[in-house]
Length: 253
Image (tube, rainbow, N blue to C red; front, side, top):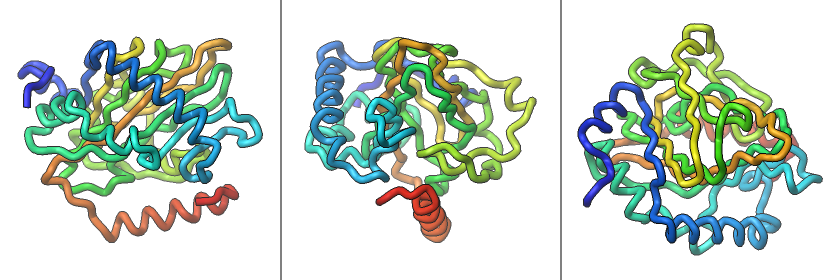
C-alpha cells in the first residue's frame, strides 16, 4: 500500500502518541461520507436501540451525542475497508491492520457534555496494544466547542486506573488524572476533513461545547494491528460492567 505517512510523521507518532493529518480524504470522498452520514441520521437513527445511539436527553433528538455499531447500514458496513484509512494505519502500526465498525460523535451547541480523560485500550483490552483511533472532524473544532486534548507521551507508560463516570458512552475514565497530566495536554484544533490519530494507550479528553451556535461532530474508526489480541477474560468482565451500566441508566441494548 502507498501511504500519506512519512518517516518523520511515524517518529512523531511513536514519541507523542498522536498525529494530525490535514485535509485527509479527497474532496469528493469527504462529500460522499458527509452525505451518507446525513442519510443515516435521518433514516436509520430513529430505528436504533439505546446502546447504538446515545442522547443527553432522549426526548430531544437534537441532543444526540454518539452513534456506535454503524454496520447496520450497508454503506457503513463496507466503510472500514476504505483504503485511505487502512494505508495510514498500516504505516503507523508497521503491520497489516483491520478497521473496526464506524462511530459518530457530537457535542451539540451549548451543552455541558465533557468527555472524561480515558484510554481507549482500557476498554479494548488488547495486548500488545497495537491499535489506534482515527477521528475525522466534520466541523471546525477548537477549545470553545470541545476539541480533543491529548496528553503527550502518555501511551508510553502502563495503563492508568479507571473509575465510573456519569457520561453516557464513556462509563469509565482515568481516576487519578491530575496536574501533571494537564501540564502535558495538547489541544487539537481542526478543520472539517482533518484527521486526528492517537494510540490506544494515549490519555485524551474533550471539554464541553460552550459555543451557542457550533456543533462538534466527528466520524471515527478504531483500527487494530494484526498482532493485537484481546484478553478475553478481561474483555468479558468489562462487557458485563457495561451491561450493568446501561441498566442503571435505564437504557435498552
